[in-house]
Image (cartoon, rainbow, N blue to C red; front, side, top):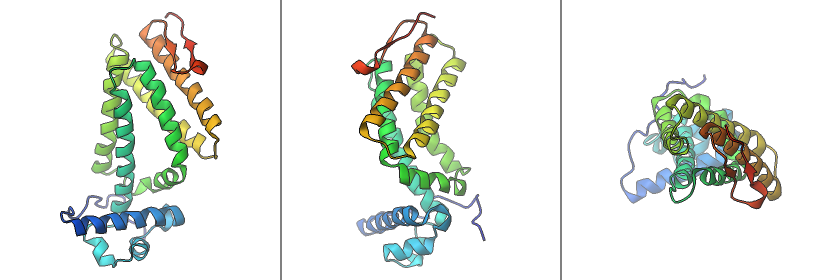
Amino acid sequence: MPERRNAPISLRKQPKQSRSNELVAIILEAAVQVLAREGAHRFTTARVAERAGVSVGSLYQYFPNKAAILFRLQSDEWRQTTELLRGILEDVQRPPLERLHTLVHAFVRSECDEAEMRGALNDAAPFYRDAPEAQEARASGTRTVQIFMQEALPNASEATRALAGDLITTTLSKVGKHFSETPRTPAEIEAYADAMADMFCAYLSVLAGHKSECGASGASQLKCGQK
């Protein structure tokens, strides 16, 4: 019987002692291995417990079901992505378009480095994507992009900034996923990221209504015309 899509995905209890934290870490590491080997649709709590070398009962002390384990793996990935976003986009010592260029390169490299696991997590998304916890986790990255857009497009309307932020993040995510599904060389990653960064920079420059040099490298110096 398929697991209910609205099953609880929060931890049953938070580990407080070092032994409990170690147990949860072991379970999560085993979950990564099972997900990579079996895929989302053959992923079960029994397989995770067996791989971790613990009883199913011990696993259930913390994770109520497989959706909770999968969501924890996904939320950890979201947190890493959000930290990447914040670390680059909130660096106010650098011009906004330079930050955007750096972000595109970092994101595309990350997608290629972790393509197998991210693909498996994407397959697992139906088990938890509609849960409130999942929506809250995704919202953190969205807020970071919104703040960046306010800085990059200070004179644009709120609707324009929202559209630009959504277009860039959606394109980056979807295109990055598609690009990373095929093994890529470092040179291919660099060239692809340069092209995508130039496209985004040109788009924001047109919205801002001024000339701009996009890109941080000599291969990515694109001048955008006056609006």
